[in-house]
Image 1: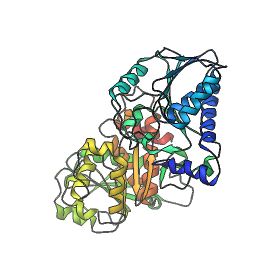
Image 2: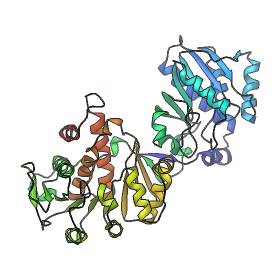
Image 3: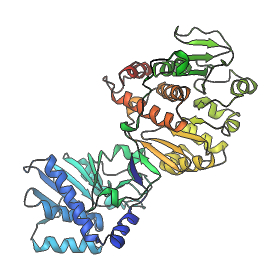
Length: 463
């Protein structure tokens, strides 16, 4: 896991005050990091257009131009006159080298955005928005210096945000890079050191970036075992049978030895699944909500849930009056999509907001929910999945648009519930289940519009 920070100015201040590293030293190392990236990835025959703003992000761009101009054909463009002390200093340095400056937007092989850094908190002026739009229309490969222009410090995205192929961010990862709207503009993210190891530059953080090394699959290591050794998941199967069957099939494939659908009816189900009208005595976890509808009364649900078994909650249950009681339980994992989460925020008295407001402030509302329901694990679905527990936040950045298909969320519920049934803690089940879900999607070989939930389930065997 890597640390993610809401802001890094305090980290910079630590370097100034405690490590005696000046702002100039940090900036030169940032520019060196960009130079190294460009030299390692592109031949010197490439032309480079660097568009700079008036502040320290523009200063980074000017410093980069100074370091590159003897090895590459660099076109330096000052969109605004330098105004910050560091921008003025870097400008004086390039004047000493007689480095030419252009006042035109020029088509080049590489386009570098050094207009605004990570502190943007206001709407772009129309002139700037138009300039960014022109940069986006250029055909060259695009690199954002620190943060794409138009991405706000809270993660909101301007309509005319710079759309980068790479974001070379300075010192540490920032939260704003991992909002859902940012997914379409940041490209591949690289962290550049600032003259000191990240292990020294960074302080501790309660927000972490997940990678596949954090996924711990339920491999069976004990030979002296039987089907009772690997859990029994009970899934409350409601009006939409398909949703619970997908959940059950994913859970069975992901290691749970026994999966039972709880139903008032006698539907035809796959032969490897079991059916019951009552909760099995040996159940080790329960999944509730996918395809639930209104088939069960609250009293019937209470009979299923009159226990302390780990519980996975999804979909329809978030609109059920029973949800306020379920939120008081221990060992629960909730997997809402954004609209469902706004409903949870409403019934829990945290906020009454639109989906758009939520999407602009996903970190904020995930934190508020987790702080109120300290026994719950929230898995907020999205382009970047947020997993929240108490004051901890984990970001799964591996989501992909192939998952935007009905039933893929039921598979996710099955993966997490399967791990709960096998004895994982709710947090570990959420992390590994979410990472497995996204890895399955990334491994899909078909056209990105053609995935079905069964493709995900079939892929589990190859994880």
